[in-house]
Amino acid sequence: MAIMEREEFLENLDADGIEEEDLESFEGKAPEKPEFPFLMFALGVTKDIIDALDGVGIIGAIANVFTATILFFYMWGKVGFVRKKLYKKFVFTAICGFIPVLNTFFPESSFFVFLSYLQEQKQVGKIIEYFETFAIGSAKKAA
Image 1 (tube, rainbow, N blue to C red):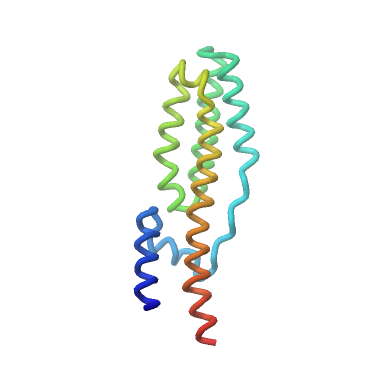
Image 2: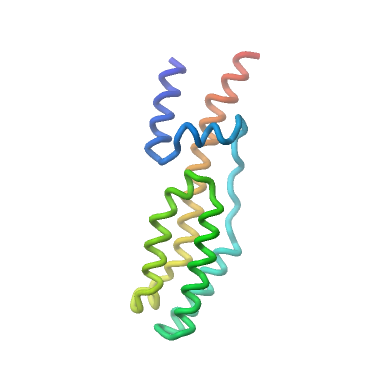
């Protein structure tokens, strides 16, 4: 019965973009919950305020390029399974940043940072649940 539950759990993780290799990369230790990225969020809010004030000006364009570059490296520093989910959101955010009407009225950078944090929380939470249910639980039963 535990084997079937584990297989179902792995299928659910796979549906969320978390593969068994991702679990093995933690080497039997559950990951820690990520902390809110205050610095990245502040960068996103600052860039969105510049967009709202500057509109389609040169300062807004420079802020878009600078922020998109920083957010790209922020996203790239994430674990593989989180990065896979964030890539599409990042591309959407970067494109929205260069559309004049959207970037003035829609705080896309702030939303990207906030949604990426929520996505990471969700995926890491599922991995922690996996480790608590199967890896740690099976170790306790063996002892």
